[in-house]
Image (cartoon, rainbow, N blue to C red; front, side, top):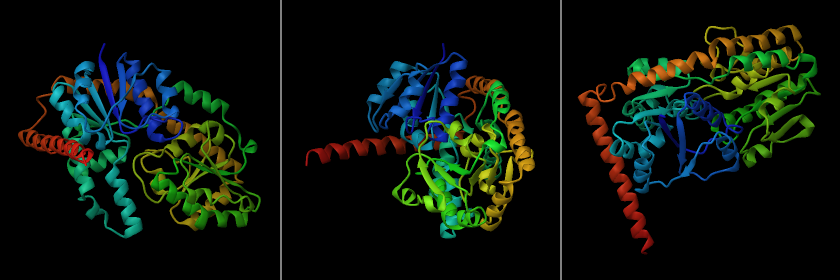
Length: 413
């Protein structure tokens, strides 16, 4: 039986974050191929992580940063494949994996391109040019990490094209793996979808600690919801999401129908109550879990271009796309009462799930890609790449030694 070790940035919380939901999908793909899967992480274990992993029989091993005990763990586990959950994890542990297990296949799950999200944020908030940010330290670090591993999982087709065009990334070094859904699940959801007349109100959802989502809620509160409420004075907007900061909690205002609900145990049950999802994201990267969840639950979306990016391919959108708040709000007002168009958009969503996100279309291709790379682990590195990896590993190794030495010196004071 082949062995997979996943090194997590945080323990996955599939019912709280899109990143956690995606990691669980990756785990399930490998379990379906009879891999022995182990997950380790230096973050604190939360009950919201334990249930999903324990039910699948996944060992959860706590580890420490900058600790040589991790080398012994690698020796004991002897994984055939190591997946890094985001480039920050590859920076921390990649040099140790390459030292202890040079034959192991290394895969980076980028989740989304962190530097691209950061570049868009800086462009919106600080008027820093995107081209300038594409050469930032963060960009250098993330692209270097992508080049050090054997290949990377990229969630968005747009980011696949971006990496190849902007950084001349070879197609063999990146693999498109979006959110996934079983075909039977799509059919079941379509048949059981809650109809227009049984739904009420607007909603939005997302981890409220995540900067793009926090900015989106601010946009709703100040620029969009007042317009909608003026036209639909009885309407309500439900704000769902975990980790709400005090700023968001203080936005709760029943008098204006702006209702901060926080975390919900079931995303599906929450979304099935409402008629429209609002996603006025101004920046971000990757695929948007809220739009994917909306399609699964037959709820059309009013969204920005950033929210829609990479989600629908060439298919008609499951809702309306506008960037300007006034047009965004007006579209929400009109669609809220237009049952014919609402049904059309809801059906678009189910068609997109079947055409773009069907699990079976990606599972076979992924494991074929893995086998191709396992056959030529040592043959795919140019001399320049070997030099880059050599110097990067030396940098991270001695940084780790320095941190440990500093800890030792501090403890004696």
